Length: 217
Image (cartoon, rainbow, N blue to C red; front, side, top):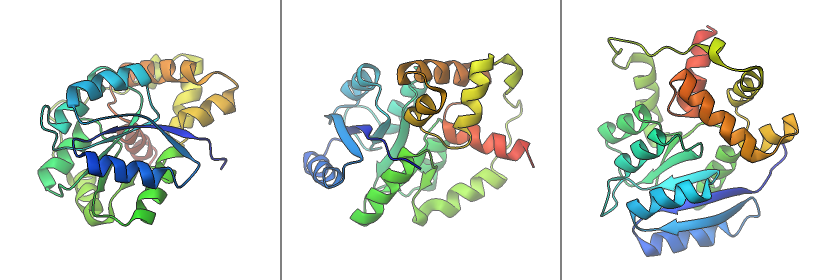
């Protein structure tokens, strides 16, 4: 699949870590850092202004907890892929992140080459989780607590164009590749994705894709 350069926003309150990540990302041509901040409040503002393809978000940020930032971004229907990038392997943090709309979960102690590979996979639409915590995620997805009232995911609410984009989303295509496939501009794709999330009651691509695959079983 063709690689198209992806924009990244980095929200982490450790300057040395941010510099290290930037240096690592700059070693490949697939990505560009369009913004960075150590403040959760500023991170929310930058996410709205920049609308990046990928947001790397720490959990432990001094002014606003990363999980609260994630919750706010999803409430604002930010269409970016939001990846938790943290030292926390606590089951509660992992499950909460998934429940409120994370598209992936990576631990900071991963090898640099594995981190770059994960970013490349994220950029082409794959769902990413660190090997060290993948069993927790998979177990939750299979045996997690069932809500007393399940949200309604009615695809008949979608317009014909939204149907097209929905089916490309669940195949794992990124916004840029969807735009290329449908010969429309990326900003239009993002508007449609926000509408799809709202109409179908999904918080993330991962949640949508898991539901779609399970509905086909």
